[in-house]
Image 1 (cartoon, rainbow, N blue to C red):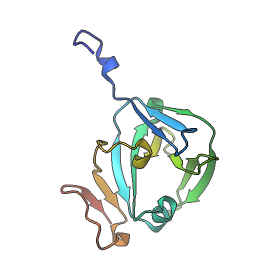
Image 2 (image 1 turned 60 degrees about the horizontal axis):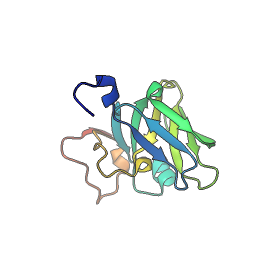
Image 3 (image 1 turned 180 degrees about the vertical axis):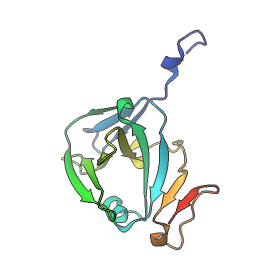
Image 4 (image 1 turned 90 degrees about the vertical axis):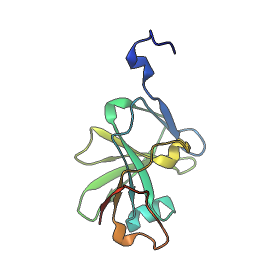
Length: 141
């Protein structure tokens, strides 16, 4: 890209996908926030000790492919609709009730080791004792 091209063409584009590639989410903006959640529901959903996710403006996300969804009710009563591939079962995105202007994508779905680090950590009272968060991350119990 040359310096004479319009700034809007310099947007960061990233592709998240399920394991088989059938379901994708293409983002055309930087994440609004990258966070980790240590709640037990996220541990079960991911099969890991915490979930890492990035929130994007819905207007900057293009979804392609078929998905099934599961609506989970959180500790505070809020609902989130998790969309996953019907073939391989991998979650590619979710939308929180009351925040339909955002799409949340698991960081691992991007398969990009250079993805921005999390800046926010929640439910740390359920964090495994051997897990350490990045220096300078904002903590919320």
